[in-house]
Image 1 (cartoon, rainbow, N blue to C red):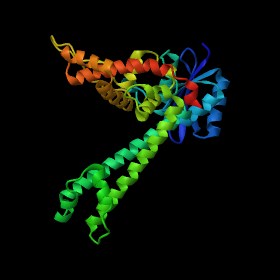
Image 2 (image 1 turned 135 degrees about the vertical axis):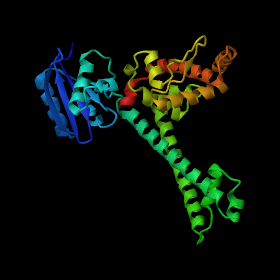
Image 3 (image 1 turned 135 degrees about the horizontal axis):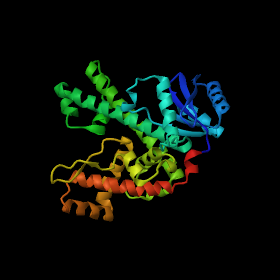
Image 4 (image 1 turned 90 degrees about the horizontal axis):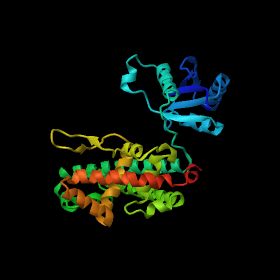
Length: 338
């Protein structure tokens, strides 16, 4: 064992709580630190005084991100730990209990994941976040435009009623200024949609440039565009996180869930995992069913074997998860972490 002290960290916005356990599971000490560079340094110094530490940190992608970056630069072992399960909270909940549970997971040999990392991967994550936010806001504005037209005066409904989507937004944005309140609201909503559409396009151009830089081979896959390619890279994280095809399928929410009854043998939708990764595989699956001969033939065999269209698509997604598991493990990690 390279480390001699397991440090579990329960992370929060202002403070982190850490608990240290020795190799026999006995609690040594605990500490609360501020989420500052000085606080991180004090935590590392304290841990190193107890032995050779390894850290199991909750929330490595949120409140614990700063601590993880600091510890990785310091060269100590850091693992990502999920929040406690419901059955583990039977004795109550506190920051100290959660931190101790994280340390016990590491001490118990549970195969914790490595943090997903920063660098180009983090840039891709931020661009995906921006695009998703802009899309949601644009959809809301378009829905509001459509709803307003239902009760609009006849002259506006005759002019805009036959339009929808971007065409409706463009027409509304070009309405002439008018004292009527509804006219102004429609015009501003149309202009909002146009601004958000431009924001989406800018984010997609930036995504395309980054994916071409770090994983150009991924874009050569049928059905994989810049957005889906970026999501595959962001969700998978460091290749060493993916221990097997099954673990990646579970991460993607494509691992089969038994739903058999009587003589019927079937599997149902897996509602767990990373739903954004699941969405990306879904989009790729739809494109490959239409445009990729091998995938299309596999899909047709599934249908001929009695699968429903939904079940067949899920089988295709599971096969794609297996395929991209191997492709992503071939990616040069250094390009994503620098």
